[in-house]
Length: 350
Ligand code: SAM
Ligand code: FES
Image 1 (cartoon, rainbow, N blue to C red):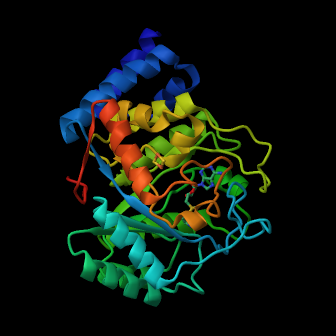
Image 2: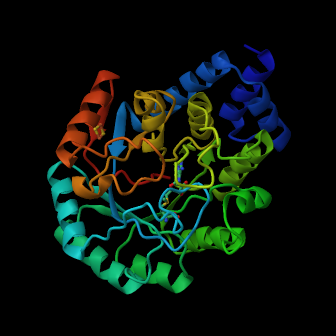
């Protein structure tokens, strides 16, 4: 282990911040023992804040229709091999009802950018109905970029949280991952509007997305530090066979775990999921994510019949399973590593 990297990890734990050169130095030089050193510290911080508990959120992937064409994403509009589907309002509500029976107290409604079919007015009605049936639950949205008035309408309808990954905090990198019509500035503007409107906001980036460098990752860490999201969603980039990035290498499992630990040390109270992509790249990814400082797991509540169609990357796990199986599986996985799933909304606590 390099003494220098260890000292930087100590400094991050103490001051919750590093300068750009220090981040770059960490990403360029860390080894496995540095990563384990950070994981141990991050785990202790997470246990200090949350105990040996993890929160669960149930994701309802209600439409895989998307107007965008992100180069990395399997449901991009140019992928003519994707079989498109849309759930009805009744379908979405019954996924939430089933989730409630199994102990979920947060429902995450996620989709491609499909506003023609699901305008904010329709989403607002769905949110109101979920809240009426389950007033003790939180509703999280992950619908992509919108305009201020739509975000406002959805917040007023009862939405509690919004997940919108920044994807990369470096403009030139953003432009390598997205077609010209997509705007880095608009994505960043959405994130500040969500904060302003009082949402609990989640953002984040893929680890090992094509063309990512240590400097770009350093910029992501600096952005996260300054933006102070309530949640950070970060998982490895995994290629999808029908995208322009089909031959790009997948992100590093170890680096993803390391970044989770660094996020925990930087923002001790942040909600940090061990993502499905992490569970896909390694069969014990979610367990090791929690042991590296994560405290949230987000199983799927979508009907089994559509799960395979929400294929963001090849090999996505849990596409054959039903909600009851994922629930059992997650409870057992957490128990095996000495953690317990808490039946609660799991809000961010400042
Ligand atoms: N449309 C919404 C949006 O843009 O925020 C939500 C759905 S989008 C598919 C959710 C996230 O999936 C993206 O923010 C991206 O980081 C992640 N994702 C997409 N393709 C991926 C891939 N090939 N590997 C890993 N993660 C991917
Ligand atoms: Fe879905 Fe394990 S979480 S099967």
